[in-house]
Image (cartoon, rainbow, N blue to C red; front, side, top):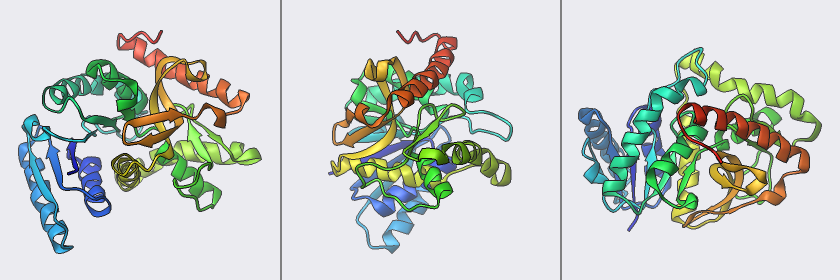
Length: 294
């Protein structure tokens, strides 16, 4: 039996629910939102869509966190969305209290679930979720720079798959200090575009959700099916790459236990230095929220 929950049924949450329902082998999918009618409405609509495909999947929705009881994985998308002109870090203070509240409720009702965070700034919120949950590092992860990695592939004009052992990636903070690996001399050309394209999408249509939702479904599938894919995800580091207690996008093996291995061998010495500088940006924002990364 596979049961996953999604907290937050805005555009990212609802699109993620649809992507997971279509792509994954699930028995039950639950949607939780502070706006009960929204969660219930999305659940009913999604149940109809899945029934049209002949899939035996139970979809429920509501505002009660007890719906999450028995979940294998809970995806956290709840939070204030990024608006035009805002950076992801601008959201930190506003979304901090939301994540703290969500995690505390989650731990009451689904203490054994793996936690996957996508709320921005995802590096900061992943670390907050880890601290507030008290769970092992491997069981709390963020979507990190997976979507940025896919955007990198698009800018390179190359087709890749997470099924590959090694492929071009964006790593570091999901923001201005992220950087590409595996692209050679093209880095200076493609990196600025990858960093700015999300802001363009937000300015044009108000938000991104197809990309995040699809990447989330691939990440969740790697956990549920124990695929052990190497994915660029937010991991709480404790000495890896010389970084102490900060969450940033790093290449990690993702399987049934969550983050099963952090692949330090994939980064060169120069890339490790860039990762440390990126992690310092995250640590600074965490310090503003009262978290000491040491």
